[in-house]
Image 1 (cartoon, one colour):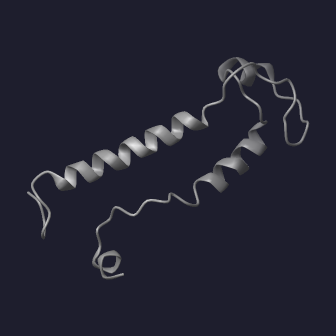
Image 2 (cartoon, rainbow, N blue to C red):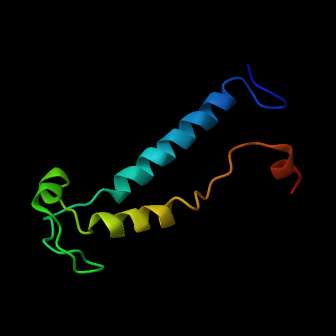
Length: 88
């Protein structure tokens, strides 16, 4: 059931598009290539277990956590269809 002026299936299409965008972003963030022995940012040693678990790893755990915090602060998409977004 669609709401307001939306056609049938529009809500599901918005949900699907949001999920597809999130999957695409996650795939883009996956490391590629050979793992590094030392972190690109702080030069700390990256443990062998981490290098084996995540092929192409380039950052230590601390630097990776900081990067992920920065990346999750802005999504760039507003598909909520709230009245506020429609009035602007």
